Amino acid sequence: MPKIKTSKTASKRFKVTGTGKLLRNTVGRNHLMMKKAPSRKRRLALDHDICKGDVKRMKRMLAGRV
Image 1 (tube, rainbow, N blue to C red):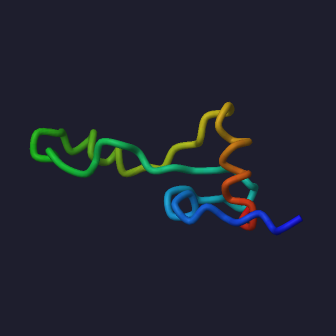
Image 2 (image 1 turned 180 degrees about the horizontal axis):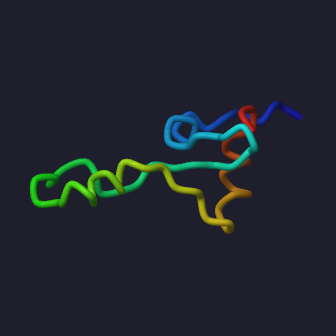
């Protein structure tokens, strides 16, 4: 069996914490920022956990990094 390759797109989009939890960036922060409130922009700057249902698939995509 060949080695499972790491999905490069997934490795650029998701971070793995020290405990093995997966984090993703918040959507909605690329453009049209003028009309968004500063508090909303700060909230959008935070990373969020990946949903429970997607974790198994993401760990398979990040085979060498998890």
